[in-house]
Every structure is written in structure tokens, then in C-alpha cells.
Amino acid sequence: MKCEALALEVTSVVLGASREFLAREGFIELLPVILAPVTDPLRTTPEWATVSAYGSSWYLTRSMIFHKQAAVRVHPKIFCFSPNVRLEPVERAQTGRHLFEFVQLDLEVRNAAREEVMDLGERLLLHILAEVRRECGKALAKAGREIPEYSRPFPRITWHEARREFGEDFELVLSQKSETPVWLVDFPIDQREFYDREDPERPGILRDMDLIYPEGYGEALSGGEREHELARIKARILRQGLSLDAYAPILALAEDGLPPSAGFGIGVERLVRFVCGFDHVRKVRLFPRVPGERALL
Ligand code: AMP
Ligand code: MG
Image: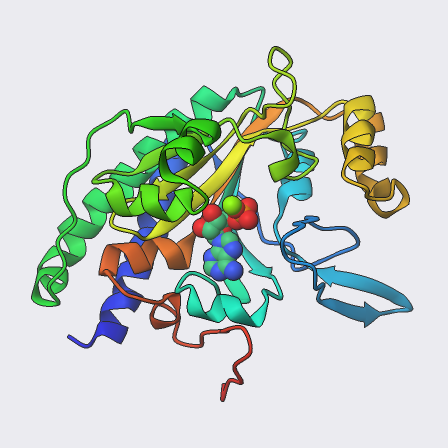
């Protein structure tokens, strides 16, 4: 089987296994939002993609973070396969991990703490990997790829410990040295966005996490608890030097009342890349959108 067909089959199994698992856990699936008046600030991706329509400018959604926070007012457990457009700097085409259009499985749970969504993330990933092994194991083995069986709970390391131990490039080194998925937790407040919740007992530290794949494949998912109180959101927006006006829709939501929540987003292409053992996410998509490259279709 050609790698391309294998990647498409694996993707299809990943989507099916995720839906099946999350339905069993009581989640409902939302349809994605593509255009939005406000979207994820993502300070490390400074370019914004916009579309003008009916006299207004709309952002192409970079993540559904704010929609997820609003959605858990209506249903306690939601997920979405969310297409994201992020105009990543051209150099990121070389990382093997960046497309400028990709899909994340984005989920959120009302009143959840970080531990609950970390536990869910581990079980979700192990379920997906088991299904992929069952459905595509032979084809993957033919292509020279075998995914080990990992056990739970995955190890954890704090951002500060990882940096001390592995230096500047700690995420990559941690991923290269690890033989199992590993959690990176407790990011410093200025490393993340304003919606990541500060730990009330440890000022300056966030109640958030990334999951890092083994074998050098890097970041799998990011998530955590969310800031949901108006005053705290305002303070965090200002702390980051952003304008309150730009995030007025979020402030209006918070004023109306946002429940506490936690969740994460896991990149689908990166997951399939890891499963297939590819060097680049471009091999996962039939119509890849690689920063700086033109596409025929
Ligand atoms: P973030 O909230 O920025 O961490 O994005 C959520 C997840 O989406 C990440 O953990 C990655 O798995 C995936 N992701 C983020 N940016 C990209 C990208 N440019 N190309 C492919 N996948 C991405
Ligand atoms: Mg991330």
C-alpha cells in the first residue's frame, strides 16, 4: 500500500475511533466555526487571515477556544473537528509539524479540572492507538512502523524542570529522549495565552499542559483550565499588552457568565504523522497547505 493511502486510512480510523470514544464518554459533536469576529490571540503566530463580508472583517478561525467556552454553557461536554487557519511563518515549513491549514480535535468539559481532562486525553489517545493497531497494524508493519503499547498514567514533568534538565530546546529533547508520551505541565504565565487559567495557589503558574509524543515527534496537544471570570480575563488581556476592545465579545460573554471549564486540542495531522512515522505532516494530507508553498488543488 502506498504511504499516501495508508495515511488516509489511518486518518479515517483516527476520526472514527475519536468519535466513538467521545460519544461513550457523553460528549456531543459540534459543527465547526470557520469565520469568526474574534479568534485565538496566539502570540507566536503574528499574521492574521481575514475575509471581508457584508461590510465587516472576519477572521479565519485559529482555534475554537472561545466558541468552546461559550458552548459548554449549553452542553457539559463538547468536541469538534475544527479546521484552523494559522499563517505560520515560512520557516516553520521545515519543522515537519506545521501546516497553515490543519484540523484539531478540540474538546471542552464544563466544571472540569485539569486532572480530569489529562486522564481523558490519555484514555482517548490509547483508544485511538489500539484501534489504529487493530485496523491498520498490518499495513503499518509493512511500511516499517510499529507503535509500542504505552501504559497509563503517562509521566509528567513541569515546564521549569524540563527547562533545567534539557535546556532551551527542552520540548524537542524531551520528545527525543522519551519512550512514552509525556506531559509537560505548569507553564509560566507569560508563555501562554490570556485564557489559560492561573493557579490561584501558585501565582505566575498556569493550570495547563502539553502532551509530548515520544521519538522526537514533538507536541501532540495543548490544553488546560480556562480563565472564566470577567475581572481575571480583563487583567490577563491587559497583562499581555492586548486591547480590551479587540476581545470585547469575550468580555461580554464573561459578563453574561462563563462556567469554569477545561479542555484541550489535539492536532489530527500530527497524530497521524506520529502513527505513520512520517518526517512531515504534509504527507498526511491529500491537499496539504504548507507555509510558503503554492498548491495545485
Ligand atoms: P495549540 O492550541 O496552538 O497548541 O494547537 C493545538 C494543537 O494543534 C497542537 O497541539 C498541535 O497538535 C496542533 N497544531 C497547532 N499548530 C499546528 C500547525 N501549524 N500545523 C499542524 N498542527 C498544528
Ligand atoms: Mg500548543
